[in-house]
Each structure stands twice: as structure tokens, then as C-alpha cells.
Length: 382
Image 1 (cartoon, one colour):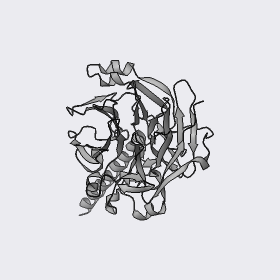
Image 2 (cartoon, one colour):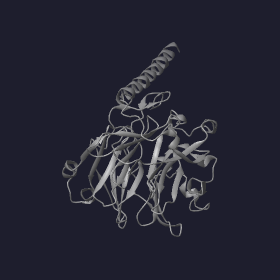
Image 3 (spheres, rainbow, N blue to C red):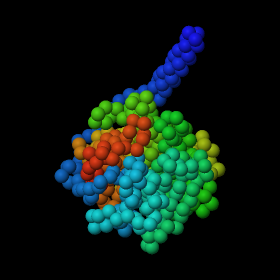
Image 4 (tube, rainbow, N blue to C red):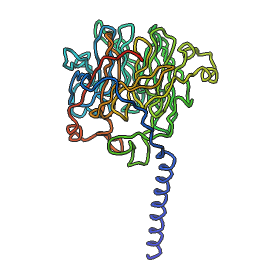
């Protein structure tokens, strides 16, 4: 009996030691990183000139604006608001959120992450497979009739972490930003032919699309998962396409540089991976970021997730901060209106994200109210 007890004790001790060793290895490999230097400047736009468009009970995620000025947004899927809410995608009408396109279709929209209103008058929505399903789902709505015209699921395993999408100006191709799973899987851009539904991974494992070794600074310390075991380190996220179809701009969240690549090269399926990589251009420095958008004169607006604001980057110029607000926890999605204003969401992710990525407690969400979508007039370039 004593021998059995000793064996059991040694076995449990061995298991405990193996678990501790595994956690230590995870921490060493995935839990490191350096604090990112503060690249923000004094804001150009005064806080008093930033308008609150709407206050919400639950955190907004992404936002997009149609060519005629209609504003659409979603509740951030990290909230898992389907537990206690009935609507998840909205249009802002006269300052009030209205379920889009209607109440009946809301169950299909509970896990929408990225959204984009294209030049053809369609609203595109993407629900990545990692949230609640086997396959990444893409939907589109005709904004003239508010009816669904596309409902397509990608093949299993394809673009599982695609959090955002953009449609080329000709309306024929979607570009998806697949962030990867922190540093466990590689990030890439996904090219989706909207007619054939065929996909291609491009710039897969390219340094410009992968996270660098930075930690994200937030109000109460470092943004991390599993009580610091895994750094909140995210691959390519923000994407934007110039109206003339010349350039695809993209920004990796945990990266110090904004990049662009000729759109024609991305769309050329015959171009070898190394030839495409050779066409990537560094635009300039950026903050640790989430969403990006383009102004009419070609400047890139980048959300600054560490400093509660929006920065401006343009080739050949210095990075400058347009907006910096202490009240903004996590500047997330951003879009331009036809009259030259930038609309952005504060998804406030660090204030409620569970250490194990479990759905946040409703009391925690309630404590952060109200959540806001804000806007400001973009000042002229330097």
C-alpha cells in the first residue's frame, strides 16, 4: 500500500512538473515582448472638437460609411452579446441605432467582425470561423433594397482568423486580413474572387504581416492573455484600398510600420510569392493599431490603441496624432464620411476581455457604460 502511495505521489508530482514546465515554455515563447515606444504627438484636433455620435450599452466593434453617408456598425463580437441582446448590426439613423437590415436577420449577424460598404452600394460583413463556427462566413447586402445578396462560407480551415475585409473598386475581389492566432499561427492576406469564390493566401508569413515582439500598454499594465502567459500580439489587421485601385495599404496591429503594395500585384495569381514580397513598400512609422482608413487626398488614418486616438501617416511625412482622448480605451474601427469626417469606435476591449478569452460578465460590461462612436473633421495635411 505504501508503495502504491509513493508511486501515485511521484506520478502526480511528475504531472504537476510537466504542467509547470509546459506553462513556462509557453510563457518564454509566447509571453515576451518589449514595451512599445510612445510615438504619439500633441493632438492636432482639440478634444472639444470630437463629437459623440451615439452612446451605447455595449461596445461597438467596426464601423463603415456608404458613399451616400449612411453609417453602419456592429457590437464587438468579443462581448458575445447574443447572451442578452437581440440585435448586433446597426445603422445609425438620426442619431439612433436601428437594427440592420431588420430584426429577423439579426441571429445571422451575431458574430460579425469586419464590415465594408463598397463602391457598388453593398454592405459586406465577415464572421471569422474562430468565434463560433467551422467556416468563415461572408455576407453582403444591397443598400438600395437592404436585402441580402451574398451568403457564402469559405472552405473549412480557410481564413479562420479574418477579422476585416475590403472590396476592390471594381467590385470583383475581396481582400481579407487574416490576423492569425496571436503568434501560434501565421498571419496573411486572403484574396477572394467574388465570382468563382476561389481564395489565395498572399504575403503569408511575410515580416510585414506578422506581429513584432511588442507588448501593448493599457491603463492597468500590459495587454495579455492567460494572466501574462500569452502576449496580446496580433498580425495584419487594418486594410484599405485606394479608390484608383493602385495601392493596398495594410497595418499589422503589433508592428511599428505601415505598408503598402500595388493592388495589381496582389491580384496577379501568376506572380510568385517572392516577386510579390519584393513589391512591398514601407510607408512609415505607425502606432500599435487596429483599424485604418484613407482620406480623399491619400493620407492613411490609423487608430492608436495605446493612446486613445487617431494618427495620420503619409509617405514622406512624419507621423502626427490627430486625436488623443483619455476617455478612449481602445480606438478600433475607423471610416471616412463623404464630407471629410472620420468616424471611429471605442471598443474598450481591455476593460472587459477575460484572461482566458471567455465571454465577459454582464456586470463588467455595465460598469463600462456608456460606449461611444465618435467623429471629427479631418484637418488639412501638413
